[in-house]
Length: 129
Image (cartoon, rainbow, N blue to C red; front, top):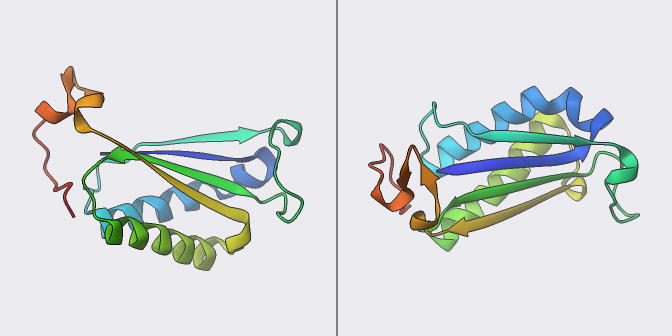
């Protein structure tokens, strides 16, 4: 399981949402082995005055937060971050300086999905990669 939140300035984020969604999910499938039908993404286009960022970033500054079950190796998480940077930069021409990625891991028992705690779910993919 992985849920994605993407934050950015409305005028910058909205035009790239569709392509960004495709790129993010493609990387999640390649690196984490998530199934194609497990796409959970939410976008938060914000007014410029509500989205503060350092002066060395541009208006295209974008934050990607990934919440997922714990259990992936350090190498897998590093690969996920590296592939997101690479693919987003190549396909959307977003500068690596204007992208921040954070992974939040949670024990499966701390998720509630389809009426069950996450550790009681039968998954059709492996979390321990």
